[in-house]
View 1 (cartoon, rainbow, N blue to C red):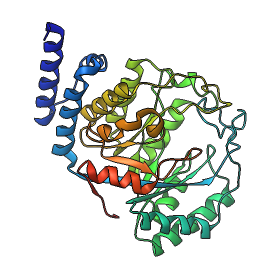
View 2 (view 1 turned 135 degrees about the horizontal axis):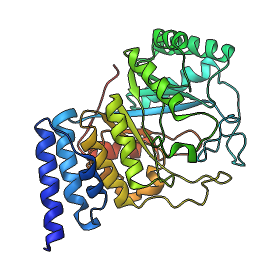
View 3 (view 1 turned 60 degrees about the vertical axis):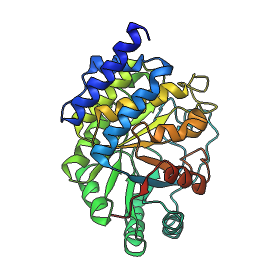
View 4 (view 1 turned 120 degrees about the vertical axis):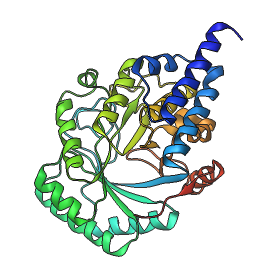
Length: 334
């Protein structure tokens, strides 16, 4: 074993011990770990897994989505097939009916999901659609025993109060990338606009789900800047999406990260956010392949199951079998 390998092994041990004793990882240390050779990645994964067990245990957050309104989004996010200005082939349809949303929630509950998230395209719903959706959420809350999430774009205090009063327990609003890289992937709104919605949710005492996408062309440091800022904001749940390049979008030819790079990223996010739910999200099947189970033992304790907004996932049965084989217990509705 050469001196470089010994250095990395000692660094991992030192960081793990510090975090388990209530300390924090430094950004310079995190940068070093991103450069970890593939043959030492298992050591990092094991350390992150022990941190996960210590702080969040073995409960697993299995979340099912419904894309309740798709396409024709006026924003220009470079990765998204739903942007009206791109040539992506995403399906376009108006807000789904209350009956459709209720049916999807029941199916999510029956499949074994612990959470059900209603997602809509666009920066924000118009007033009629928002009113209709609040009514639908109230129906689901009264009839289905499942934790309710939503991802409906930008919020103001009035809408936040109505939405959370209807039964939404967690709100998702991803920052996607670091502040300095964000203008490279979206120009129709500012990073601060996204941050403002995250802070509004945080002030409302509702659980905050906020993460991003890796593989957008960001540098390793920018990836870490996102993670450390999420820790600063105190978010509860961090979905890690991995770019699945969509035809017709500006990033359709982007080169996604390797499986080992993703594993290292998941592990380092756990070290930066030891008490958060770290959730594997879009792109995991394509980019991790047979390494998905390893990612679950590298610090993750949550997953989107049953498909995403514009792409399909694996079967729910296969996902939940993998979760149980990894030693987790699906969390119950809360």
